[in-house]
Length: 236
Image (tube, rainbow, N blue to C red; front, side, top):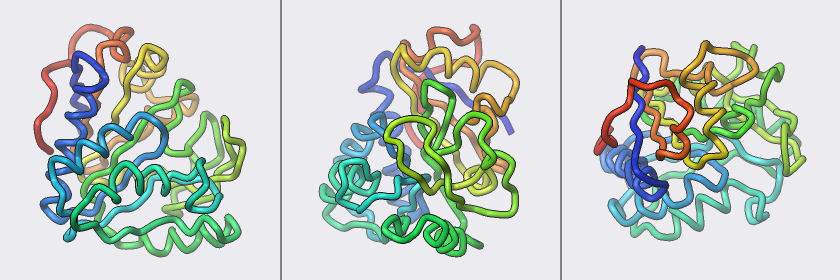
C-alpha cells in the first residue's frame, strides 16, 4: 500500500495534524494504539482539546517500559498526563501490565490483542530508526507468530520493554508516523526514502491493508528526496 508523506512547517503544526487524526478516530469509537516518547505529547494535548469525549474509543499502547505506571519512564504516565486527565469522558484503556514479569506481561498483552481490530496506530521514530521498542537488527523484527513480545532496550532508559510486533502494528487500518526535528532527518530518510532494512525498523512497518501516513516538520524532512510531499492532513 502507498505511503503518504506530509510535511508541515514546524513541530506544532505536525502535532496538530496528528491530533486531528487521533480526535477523529476517537469520535468514531476507534481502537487506537498510542506511542510513547516525547514527540507525541503535544499531539495528545491538542487531541484532548479537539475531542473531549473518548468514551466510545479504546486505547492501546505500542510499547512500554517494564516499570510502575507512575514511574517517570512509563508511557502510561505520559498518556495519562497529556491525554487522559484532560478528557471529559475517557476511553477504555488497555494498558500493558508492566508490573508483571516481562514474559507474563507480553503473553497477556499478546492474548488481549488477538482478533482485535486496530483502527489507528500512532508511531514515532528514533534517531536510530527504531519505532515502538523495535530496535535495529533485534530478534523481535523477525517475530511473526506473536503480537507482543519482550524487548531488550536499545537506548536509555535501559530497562526491559514490552512492544507490539510488526504483525500487530501493520494490522492497523491507518498507521501514522509522527516525527519532528533535525535530529531525526537521517532516520526519516532511511525509513521513508530508502529500501526497507532491519537496520531501520520503522522502514519495515506499513499498514498491511489500509493507509500509512507520515507527518513530518520541515526539519525532519530535510534529508528526504524531493517528491512525495504535500499539505498536512486534516483527517484520517
